[in-house]
Length: 429
Image (tube, rainbow, N blue to C red):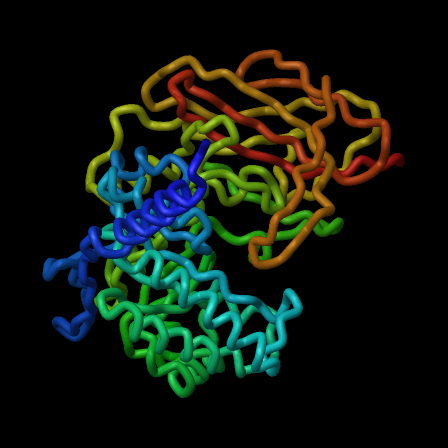
């Protein structure tokens, strides 16, 4: 006969040992921020630590291999797994804490809900504070996006206070969408317990040092999202389709904007490039540095250079431009239904590998969100492109009028890829 009392005692003992293991056996690595040479630096275990990071938890072994040293999350879901995997490959983690947003319906005048949120986050901090891969705590993400109630900053400061009481070993920040003088003033007045500021900027990255100073921020900061020109900053067609840069154009702006700001500003303690992975946001290729198949774009070559000073042996294909009906995207292309049109590709492979093309035609996305909220991927339209060679193909336009977008994935056969897309509108004359 089974003794259930003994089983329960054994279970409780195992639970207790797991809690002991997760809380006490791990040794936290202390991170501090100190002033130096009219700027600031991070010290991790007493040694200077400049963040060469990426947002996302995919392919972190590659991140470490290419010279990155840190990842950033948006919440603490699967925190134990993420912190353990990061530690095993030598990376640190800026751990996001998922703080409710006003634009999603949270009311910061509701004192009971605010207190419940604080106590829930306290549990996360207590659970993960001793993991050696932990670097910084990030309170929320873009809480200033589409908000009206400044009491959110009181909540942020109370969370920061709580973290400092629970965990004296790691700094605390909050991530802002853009740089705005009003928010900087709120942060300075209402959030004195934050240790540094985090900003998320795309097309304006090169101007961030000057913009922050003009807004009144003289303290340390990091850039927790940066990348290509954002869809909200890009040229739009008359039918409101944003025009995306090619992967090679992105590589150029990632490099130039990083070198003009993050690399030079002594107040910046590092950054997290966006996105070390793939997602649908306006398009399947806009922000991810990888394709859905895990292929690497030219931007990853650039990041390896920025992090290490050396280029990879195998460079991704370089795609200068793509034309449809001898027009570029900024020509605002209108085509007739059920007709054939020439596609011309101007590209080369630096290693002279044979390139192959994959084509995909999608309806223009209509599931459009803000702030990186999840979007659904449009369903592809089959049998739309007939390839002549890697530099030329023919598009058969859909019979139905409306907005579409043609995508090209140009592979070198060695897991490197170039991407481009071109929006067009099918309209009967």
